Length: 259
Image (tube, rainbow, N blue to C red; front, side, top):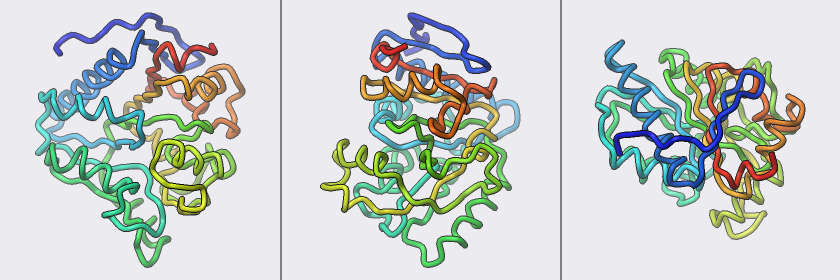
């Protein structure tokens, strides 16, 4: 696992670098190596590193690689995640705290993992608490995915703002977003998905020094086409990546199939 797989296609759309890989294995491995190098370089340069990680089925293969690979002194890494459902406990199997504790924190033992408290009593206070944590810790790397409705984190089209004055906010989830959670098997029905969530905003995500967006699979073909070939607009929130020269989009031939 020492050399990065070579993309089958590499191009730039506006300011965004795009890498297309022949399969999900190569895609996930390239992402893993890029993350390892970014965090290791940050630690070598400044003595510590900080990153924001995404959840979702598209991230599982990459996170497994990251745990297995080694090469990062995790005792010097502070981690954040980017969203959480409002009103569910940390033990809920569909919750993002549960996802991160199972797949990342319990295996890598980072210096700190700061979680959004989904079952907090005062959601607006929780937004401010997390905003303060982010403000105190410059972020070296943000690893994100793209939702089927084009969202990044829980910035769905109806609530996404490119010039958002907030860094963390409370949002009502779009039905398309909730249906994706049902189709992925996380909830039994649309009604079972919590209607609200806490999310980092688009400016908070893009404030990282480096952004890597991982979006494999055929079901992401439409949002990837909209991201790269549609207008830069909140109708596809991820399209803002085209204005970010510090971002790279990593996709496979399935998610690139409509380009």
